[in-house]
Length: 156
Image (cartoon, rainbow, N blue to C red; front, side, top):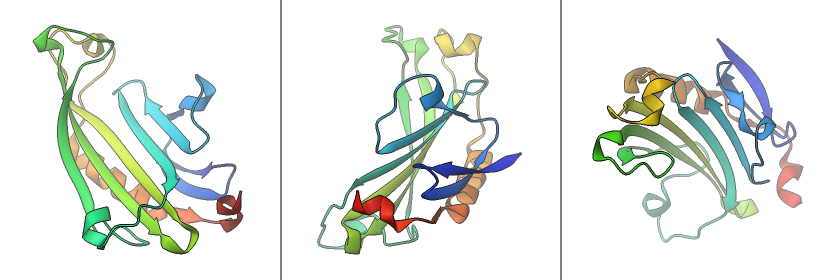
């Protein structure tokens, strides 16, 4: 189930799956970020408002207005400084960049999905592995619903 959620005080909205909790209700989150986490899968969704990066070409900074290029990658990480190599989790990472040169702003949307949890990872006790294909479709729905409703957010 998905719910339209107000981001940055409602200035932006996006459909975020209801299983994701607003991390700012648990801990402090930077003013330029909205962070959501699913405690059952260790998945996270992060929306960041950043200063515009003036690159010579769109390919160098990903894309314009609607993400024309989506970055997909994988990374091995451990949590809580776990040192055992078998505690590494394999994450699939989806990232999109919305570029707004007229207001000197970049917005980055990222989703992290643990697709393989290490045998000795502390996550193994509390989280289930995610599916990268399902995560990709979910990420696409978030991007398709992403809407800026109050451009005054960028004048602050």
